[in-house]
Length: 292
View 1: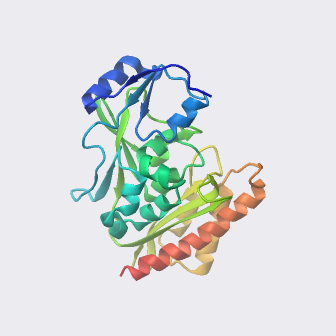
View 2: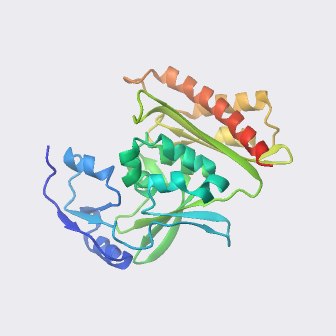
C-alpha cells in the first residue's frame, strides 16, 4: 500500500521547524529517523497533510553530560546505535546501552531515535519504560519557549503524549546517579527484533547498603508504558533482601494491566512481570554493589 499524498518540508534550523509547526499544527507530523512514522504512512494509519523532516537540523544529535545539574542530555536526533555505543553512557548509565541493544534490528537501530520512539508512544516501545525507570525529563520546545515534562506525565495513553501540536521534543534528560547505581532491561519477545510480549526496566541507587532510589518501568502490559510506583515506594530506604525484592516484584505485577492476546494470557504476562522485576532488581543491586 502506498501512503496518502502529503507535503514534505525539511527545515534547516530548529526555528524554521517550529515556525512550520506553529502554522500547521495538527495537520503536520514531525519525522526524525522515520522508523515509526513511515510504516504508519504506508499503511495509511496516519494521513498528515505535511511531514516535517527534522533530520537536517544541526546540533540535535548530541549526547552530552550537563554537570551543572547532573544529567545526560540526549538530543532528538541521537540514534539508538549512538546510545548503544556511547562510552560515557556505558559508564554512567549502562542500562541505556543494554536497552538499545534490544530494539528491533541493526537497520532500525541505525536510523531510529530515542526521542522519536517516546513521541510515538507505543505501549510496547522499549524506551518509554527506560525513561520512566530513570525518572527522566522530556524537553518540549515551541516558539513560546521550552517546557520540561516529567516522563510519568508525558505518556497519556496509546500513541498519545502530553506534547502540543506546535512542539518538538529537543532532548531527553537522564539523571546521573549520585550514589552507586545499577540497572537492567529484560525483554520477552517471540523472535529476535520483535515487539515485547513483556519487558521491564529497572534502575536502583544504593546508599549505605539500602535502596535510596528505585525506578521500575513496564512495557507492553497496559495502554501505555507503566511506572510501578507502589513497588518503587516499597523499596525506598530498605535493604534489598530477597523478601523485600519479592514483595516489590509482586506489587509491580499488580500494577500491570495486560490483556489476553496471541502473545499470551493476562495472567501469564503478569507473572512474567513479577519474575522479570525480581530478576531485574537482583541484577541491578548486584551491579550497583560492584560499582563501589
